Amino acid sequence: MKKLLDFDSEHLWHPYAALKNTPARFLAKSAHGTTIETADGLKLIDAVSSWWCMAHGHNAPEIVEAIQKQSEKMCHVMFGGFTHEPAIELGEKLVNFLPEGLNKIFFADSGSIAVECSAKMAVQYQHSQGRPERCKLVALKGGYHGDTAGAMALSDPDGMHTLFRGIMPHHYFAERPNCRFDEAWNPADFASMERVVEEHKDEIAAVICEPVFQGGNGMWLYNAGYLKSLRELCDRYGILLILDEIASGFYRTGPRFAMMHTAEKDCADFVKPDIMCIGKALTGGSITMAACVASEKVAETITNSKIPAFMHGPTYMANPLACAAGIASLTLFENRNYEENVARIEKRLKQNFEPLRTLENAADVRVLGAIGVLELKAKPSADDILRVIRETGVWLRPFCNYVYTMPPLITTDSEIDRICEAIKMIGECEPAPVVEGEDEFHE
Image 1 (tube, rainbow, N blue to C red):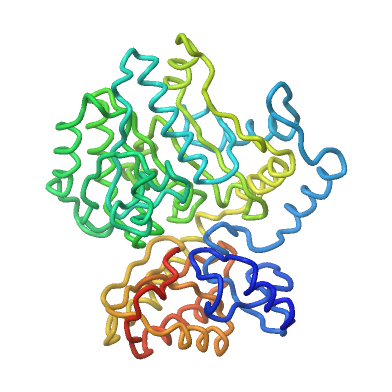
Image 2 (cartoon, rainbow, N blue to C red):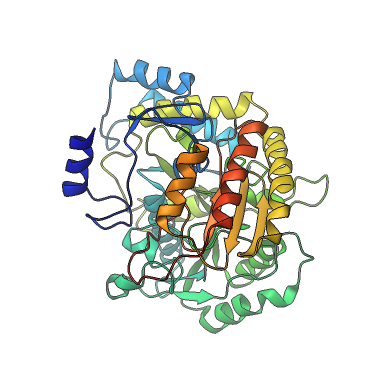
């Protein structure tokens, strides 16, 4: 085991970490359900769903079987000039699963690429309308949309990507919505977005945001009323609305998609975007895949223009193995009552998180669906976090001052209690001295 870890430390980069002298890593041996087992025999509850994607838990038998069966037929074929049954079947399932009217699907390799596609699609839509000058987007401060150049350019301009400003295209940003999810909607919270859009309306192709839940740059939950105002503003000026549901979709915040929080009571009439991005839980976390999904209006406008082809085409677009995993994952979403399960998880998280407000180092507590966040005034040391992980058998991945959980949607009440106890222990640790450059920034 030491030989493997030594090679890893010498040659393999990990996300947002130095190549050498990083905090001790675990050597994962296997993973099933909510648990990851390490080579030294430690069993860890995966409290962050391996970065929010393992909705059904690790190695869901239905998904593993689907990948195995597909691998016996065809692991990959280019999607240019070919199609195949797994892509068609997954497309059919998605059309039935997605909000009505969002039914034109572009399969992508990852969430970041889906975001890149959504931005290109919005610009091409405006070009097809005879408005080529509309080639900028508006995004929210505090947002996170991925790590490729186009996605970074739409993420928080003062967040983790500042080092790369020189290679990123320039877009416009509105202030983060400060009206909390559980507070009454305050229209004044929309003033910044309204001002930015009105000032630059002739340059703007689309507005993009994470609906209700801003993930990797602050774990922030904001009022759904913001999305209603945003939809009205975009319609007023002929600007497209892009919703990035990569982290918030597939029941993570409660309903099937976070945009559905905008529905009036007992009403299915919720805010819908012109383009949406999905990923992560799409394949149950088993294999990388995402999608950029357009409305009929967007698709028809591009299709009927002088340049009818959408100008993007990944090598692994609609990879058959990923499509097979996606079909199995969507079947699980269809057959299991995850909305009810997430409501149970939310109730348990709230019971455990509310007392954390009294911790001396606590700055805020936030819970929605299967998301729980303890924001600290100051973070503890990496050594203390590692000690808590080992002592509790709970895998947590705090970043900056945020200790959070986004567990698999199959997590039991007793496992939620263990996760929350581990988070409490981290919150009780002494703050660590600030050392410049030692952070692992990512979510």
